[in-house]
Length: 82
Image (cartoon, rainbow, N blue to C red; front, top):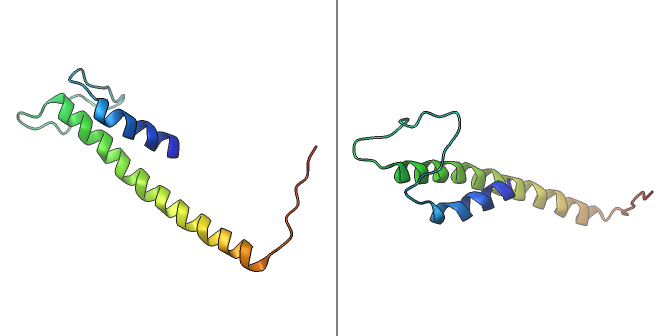
């Protein structure tokens, strides 16, 4: 999730009028009057970024709770190597 989010955030300001292609979606999907392909591409990238950020925040909360539980119980930690 973090990698995809980072890639999309990197890509967003670098979109050009050439456009990017989203496979599996028709070019005219959601395209209104006067809306350029660049605007469509930006909206699609932003629409993908928003749920990724929400999902990642949920994962962070769960991991934080798990981490606090491990610290509270102070169970010994062991690792099997080999």
